Length: 419
Image (cartoon, rainbow, N blue to C red):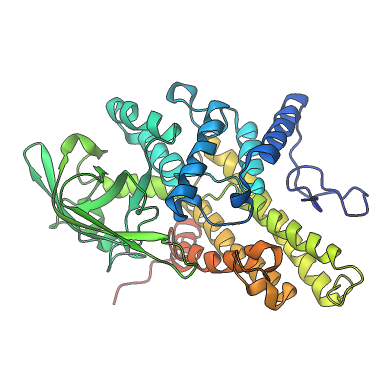
């Protein structure tokens, strides 16, 4: 693919004249060398099947998932799979600017990264609240893509209102006995382990009686059922727990302190560091397609409405990139607030849908065809992305939840009383 606008540092217009991007990283020679090495590796190494899809490889058939795992293990061997982890836990141990370079390049190239529940959600929790034994048991296998993780938060009546969860964990000696149901579980179909929020004290206010447990999916009493989304992929799963015995040593944090642990995890989940690069990839694909229509009836480059829409998308990407860089800086400094994390989640959940919506409208009927259709334009990326964009406005906390967090924690607005 010819890059119409370089996603990171020094964009170049189709005419070859430089375009000054409002948000740029100033790289030294070593960082530019890292960037060039990454681009060369990704151009040669990403399997073609992943260049033609925007779906998470954890959602794809198992054979595709296993090829993605092999790719991630090669990244790990180069220190690029978990560059934000400390070196003593098999991470890259890289400074923040190198982390941003690596994660942007991987995102822009469409690298099939597996197990984000383990690498970007559970791992930060274990670094902060896990015991040395838990860190030793779980972090290495996550870094090596040997163990896949699922997130067990939502239930039938506890999604946006997560504190309403009902799944119970009753202490029985050195075990908890789990009973209940989890649903909309990300990567539940392929997971080896799942981290769950459970109710360990039903007699206190909802947030005060929750604990955070790590559960081996092979434990007797667990039944998993895949849930197929409108993309056609079994994106989610649901799990039924019937007298499932989990050792107490698999609890992260203190008993009844799971709400605090869960909030720390959500802050890590909602920061969306790579979304600007992914959005830039969609934008570049759209602009490249438009240039390829020169001289045909589909040549819309001089259409004022199309030009206005493209300018709007470029502006939003620049704003989002600035937000992502600020998030990365604050994360590295340990100063990220819940309100800013929610602002990032809200911005990118909304814009991830918006850019695909604009793209499909410009592409026309062929832009609404899914990957694999012979008549699909831009490999069906925009059609598939449009459906996944709807998912992102719900998964990880709905847009309405993010607005509540921003209003209450960020702006100090009063909480609306319950009816």
